[in-house]
Structure formats: structure tokens, C-alpha cells
Length: 145
Image 1 (cartoon, rainbow, N blue to C red):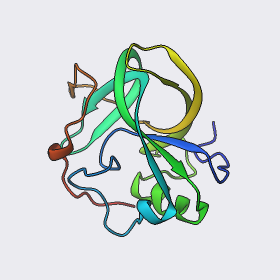
Image 2: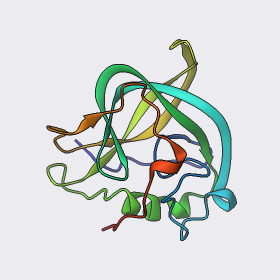
Image 3: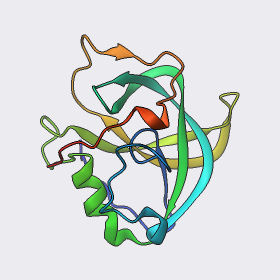
Image 4: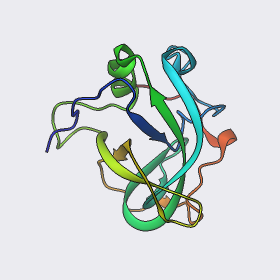
């Protein structure tokens, strides 16, 4: 498994936690507004867990909330991967970047795919966010790297 597949200008991302527009804990050193555009809501299939001030999406059948983002300037990709603690080692990488289908509010496919930072560690004992929506105010700044 590769944790950091290649990304092209114009690729979509689905942000569901601290990278959502307006989220508490959003990294100030990553200028998402200058490097692309937030495009509005999108959903994806998964299981969202509270990891103590930030969420993690794992495989699952729940309908999770995200914000679609078009990345125009790929030079910030390294900063995004660093923020999400993506490493080259699939065993220790906190998150991995994977393609997912973008879904609408009802869970139907939109025809779009997007990159998603999927949590790559155990969620045993973590509280599941049943409605699949990480609140904007729930985040906290976290250490990276």
C-alpha cells in the first residue's frame, strides 16, 4: 500500500475534520484559500471516530460529512501530508491518502472522486461519531510530524 499516491492540480479532496473551512484547530501555516478552493459539502462512506480533539475516518458503511476542496497548487501537498502525519511507512503512518467516491446528501454517487485522509491506526476504545459529522468547534491544534 502506498500512503502518498501522486496528486495532480485540480484534484478534489474531502476534508472532514481540522481541514474543514472554519474548523477550530485548522493549521494556520497551510493557506488552503490561496492554494485552491472550497467547493461545498460532500459525503463519503466510512466510520468517523473522535480521537481526542480531531477525528479519524476508517472503513465503514456510515454516511460521513465532508467539505469538497479543489487543490490547484500542489506545492502545499507536503504540508498537508505532514499535518496529517502521513509517512512512507504504511504500518506507522497515522493517516493514508486514498481515493473515495464523493456522495450527495442521500448517499448517492455524484460521479466525482476525491482524496481522503483515512485514519490508519486502531480506533479500539474510541467514541464513534454516529452522525458522521465532526463539529467545526470541536477541534484543537495538534502536534504534527
